[in-house]
Amino acid sequence: MKIDILTLFPEMFPAVLSAGVIGRAAERGLLQFCVTDIRDYTEDKHRKVDDYPFGGGAGQLLAAQPIFATLQAIDGQDSGARMVYMSPRGRLLDKDLAEELAGEPSLVVLCGHYEGVDQRVIDAFGFEEVSVGDYILTGGELPAMVLIDAVCRLVPGVLGSEESHAEESIYSGLLEYPQYTRPASFEGLDVPEVLLSGDHAKIALWNFEQSLRLTAERRPEMLHRWIEENSEKLDKKRKAIVEVYKNG
Image 1: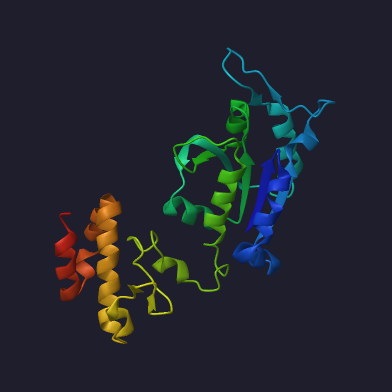
Image 2: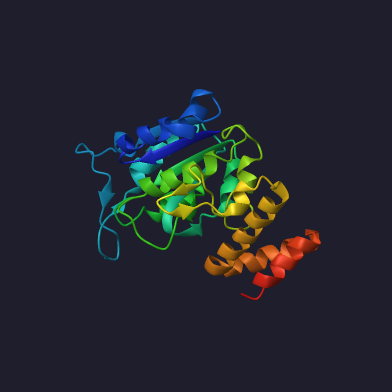
C-alpha cells in the first residue's frame, strides 16, 4: 500500500511512520509513505496558504490553489488513489472503514488546518471526509496518524500474522478480556486462579465470560449486535453464559 500525506507540518510524521510495526513494514516494502508539504506548491511569495472565507466567519481556510497544485503534482504517481480528508464532520473511523481502506492499493490523506479547506478541493478531487471523533483538534495531522496506524496494521503481512487482528478487542465483536503476566502475585494482587490451572477449556470459557461482562458494562450496543450475529453458532456452555449478560 502507498499513502501520500498532504500537510502543512511534514516534520510531524517521520517518527510515527518509521517506528514500530509500521516502520518495519515500510522497511519490508509492504508500506510506502510520501509526505508532501502543501506550502511548497503555493504561488504566494510569502508561502501563504490560507485566506478569509467568503461570507464571513471566524478563522481562515486553506486555499484551493496550493492544494490543487499539490494534488496535481502527485497525480502521476498515484492516479486512482482513494482520497481521504480528515474532518470532524466526516464519517467516523471505525473497524469497518479501517478494513475497507486497508483493501485499497493507495490512499491520499489530506490534513486540514485552520477552519478547514476550500470546498472546491473536496468536490473537485472526490475527497471523502473521515473523522476520528466528536472533538476538535488544532489540525488534521494527529487524526491522519490515527487513521494510518489503524489502516496499515490491517494490510496483509504487516502484523506478521494474517489472522492476529481478527481476535483483538473490537475486531472480534467483543471487548477484550483482562490479561496478566508474571509474577502470579504482586503487591497483594493475585492473578485469577483459573489462568494458572493449565485447563485450556476452562481458561477459554473464563476469557469468553470476561469479554461478555466488559462489553455488557461498557458497550451494551456492541454486545447486542454480537449476540444477534453469533448466538446460533455457540455451544451450550457459551449460550448459558450469554444468557446471563443478554439483558444487561
